[in-house]
Amino acid sequence: MGLVERIVYKGSIPDSFFTVPGKIYEELTIKLTEDRAMIAALFKLEAEKNEIIIYTDHQHIRLVGIFPHNEDAAYFGFWESADDLALNIEAFGLLESDTSVRKLASMTGPINFNTYNRYRIRAGSLPSWNRFDSEPVNPVYYSSLLAQVNFKEKLTFESRYITQNTLPVLYADYAALMDEQSKIPFEVIALNEQSWMQYEKELFELIEIVFNQNPFYKAISFEQFRLLYGTKFLRKICPHSSVILIDPQSGRLAAMSICYPDYQSLPATADGYDFNRDYPLLKKRRLLGKTVGVHPDFRRQGLMNYICTHYIRAANQYYEDTIFCLMRSDNYSVHFTDHTPYESVKYILYEKELVS
Image (tube, rainbow, N blue to C red):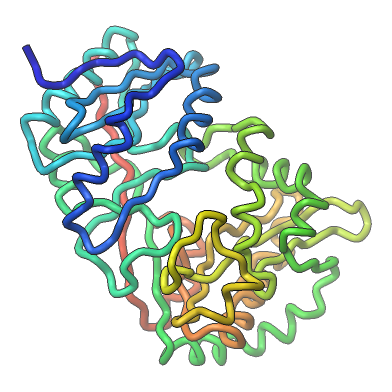
């Protein structure tokens, strides 16, 4: 009899699901924090369109199999494990068996249901910035474990850190473009808690249409969108670097950027961070470029250049350094800083194809 239990999700999550990560991460210099209520709500919402199975020994490993009702592939997420190959062979073996029985072609992950939530593995050793908010974090042996259970790299991503010494150089390089972009014929609105709530439905629709062609993107309901981007999230947005661009003729949202400071130099609070309260208290003023997108109907009009130069101007004026976060390696935007010295970290999404 194996050590890993197979638990079909039927509305409740075992307590050990939330204690396993604590044991794994206690030796790291960073702490993984999870919102138990948020995860419980997410499972409940996602159970409407997926079969969910938890594999765990309740002490050293947890793994969630996600089997969509209307897709030909399985996913795995919420994977946390000790450096124990035998346990992973057993857990992923159960996942593969459940995938084969359902005649699904592949297993991809880690994805915590969809790309709105935590996904990917961070490769390599700890970077100089430690960890920024919402960055994938994991022990360094995770990539090796996945390789040993025969998962291969499917997609790669990158974050680039522009230091205090090189940020002014980046600003100077784009100064001329900034002056040109300032004449753009779109209404520019600072994105903050108030403007987000004013355009909440339109932002939900914009994000859906901007990112729905990305690999492994899954549409979410407006209910789940509001769960993820509630007041706690909105308060931390930087209004100097985050913007909404509106087409003045149609009134439609054409583009947006979501950025906020790296708050890790401050102690965590139960109600989250608040830009107005916490920005003056930051021990290190570092800007995180998180989400940027242009509506397909408004592309090739210079909006991406405007957003990026607006970001660089704000970074240079209000921050000491910056990180361009979690860009797909094959995305054009990753080249925006090619000519500037940077520290880089790679992230990986894995896949295992099953032999039919």
